[in-house]
Length: 447
Ligand code: P5A
Image (tube, rainbow, N blue to C red):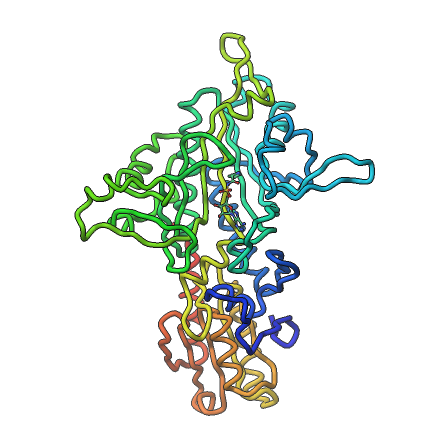
């Protein structure tokens, strides 16, 4: 992408309302624009990150055996009356009346709708288990939308729903998602810690929040230090095999959010291994058994020919919130530092003297070669001053920068900068292309 053709409305001043780094940088780097409180437009740069996150989420859902679909944002109130959540959900639900006076709502979640879909399509236990998911906008009329996309009113969620014949089988579905979540966040460069959590308006009694530690996080959390060193399960996990050992590895040590915190248990951990910190909830999984299937009569015929309510769970990931969480985890004073798998582009190419035939030709050549190798490049072909170009690239935080200027090119050299480490090196043009391509490809490998 040539920057001259892109749309990148940067802000010079730090917006007064932005209290945390991610909110500040998302506005300053032209990733989002606030349209109303907690409601954002995703501008091209932010949209590219959102799509990258979405794709990683999708790949790991598919790997775990979940099947993608798409439900609407607007729902009928009737379903919510069946489950008896219509009144219980309260003011967080945005209620709408259509021209015929019918009660509608902008979906805050989809347990009711998916249960209705399931009951109209599945009759027998022989069709189980089933896991369905979609990635769709939700609306929750939060009292205090804040921190930009972290607590929005309109936000993008991935939500999966599992259907099983027995509670034991449902536990296996829960484990599948547990592992998929560890992999999903790790692939983005985030260390997530599953913590015992409350179930709130979704219901049930088994639940984990996936927390990324960050000083600016909204949740207060407590855990054992060794949980910060765990690695993600490998890509070749057999999702139909025994998953307990993977799950146990991440749940046998103490970890809980504030609401579930057990002071006594926590204080049994040796003092130096106790972590009490703040965190961002990037995912939340629930097993709630027959709460919705009973209320909405979603039954299947069991092996003995008797109808039984199906056992269900639901599993959410805050896709738009992750954009903010990633910046909280990866930034410095100058701006964002995107991990390669979620970066809006992999490489920023800086032409320090636009209009100079040799430099223009060198840049165009590098651009073509990188793009042909599958590396995504944002080429700064504008006539801005070098200082402005450097600051802009640091702000938007692409993981690699390649700079071509008169001084280096005189000796056939390009400058390659690693945005994460700040390390710079001069390399002959071809070597620079090869080096950066290898680095990007390595970082994109899925293990
Ligand atoms: C699970 C999937 C649910 O809604 N129903 C379907 C269950 N869970 S949840 O915890 O309430 O939300 C899932 C994830 O969505 C993100 N999230 C938000 N992101 C931005 N702004 C918000 N206001 C917001 N509310 C929830 C969180 O990442 C949460 O874990």
